[in-house]
Length: 253
Image 1: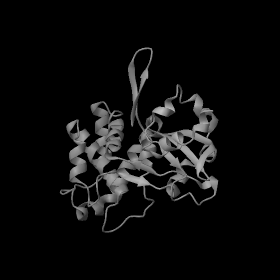
Image 2: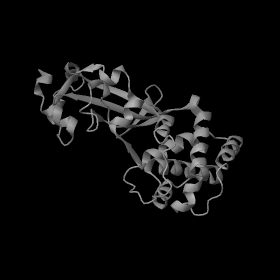
Image 3: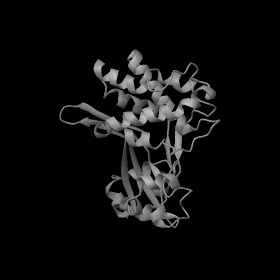
């Protein structure tokens, strides 16, 4: 779900956010101790387009684009970007270039994903059940870094995402625009394009770990103050959280 935040005084659009409701724990952490619970995070290709656009916005002038182009040009010329064998030998430099760009922008990073979490315990909604995390554009970028675990023959979804971003930024500095649909379609590298990448809870825990992940701040007895006017009776329980609410009428007693 997408959300646009607006200045209520001026009706000015401030920022667009993608909202990802996630269950805590996920399948990979449900047998772990409670302080090791975490959520799966799935990132779709349109999010990568929004991420690239958020970076492009920070290079509005010709002089700034020249600086961005200089970083991108540290990657040797690749003639056939859709061929794994041509891209992989230069992947380390692609990763390094994107990393250098991110380091130059860390003080200008902006929110990109809002991640509400809902927590279950012993098959029921936990007493401390709701909280929200916000990921910046550069934080989502950081999810893709592999800590040197790179194949010699295949391009992973994480690597592919950084390549997509590189190509979007390169087209931006060369042509002032980029066709994200074409870039994603032509550079699948034998991976399906239904998602850019996903991170299971065991991997996302190191990024999310904090007191609020173990004990979310909103208690379940506050849900009746969030869903008002009998709204719970209008839910169609097609999703897990909706089903939990519909099957927990005691929350509204």
